Amino acid sequence: MTEHVTKTIKKKRERRERAHLRLRQRVRGTAERPRLSVYKSLKFIYAQVIDDDQGHTLAAASSADPDIRQALEGKAASNQKAAKLVGEAIAARAKEKGIEKVVFDRGGYVYHGNVKALADSAREKGLQF
Image (cartoon, rainbow, N blue to C red; front, side, top):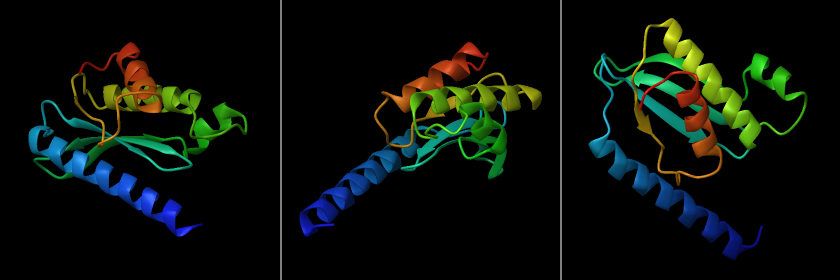
């Protein structure tokens, strides 16, 4: 990669990390209302339900999970279809643990595209945030 592209990627990553730190000052998960955290890599999308008081992950799902990968039938694991499946999976796993309400942590990402698809599908499956 050229030097310009490398600097651009680094600036974009730093911007997202700063935004996430600002967001985390306001968003905190508790036992009654844990935090639904979203992370995107270039290849996969991940979601976790976290109790910040205890420091425990209560439920997790990602497009790298074998059952979700199988449902994608070899297609890209980073697209909106994958995000919808991850949202459905995290909602189902949270409901199994008795979690109905969460606080949404978009991870510094813009609420658009894959992040929005994940959030909308989790809401459709019964999570409230």
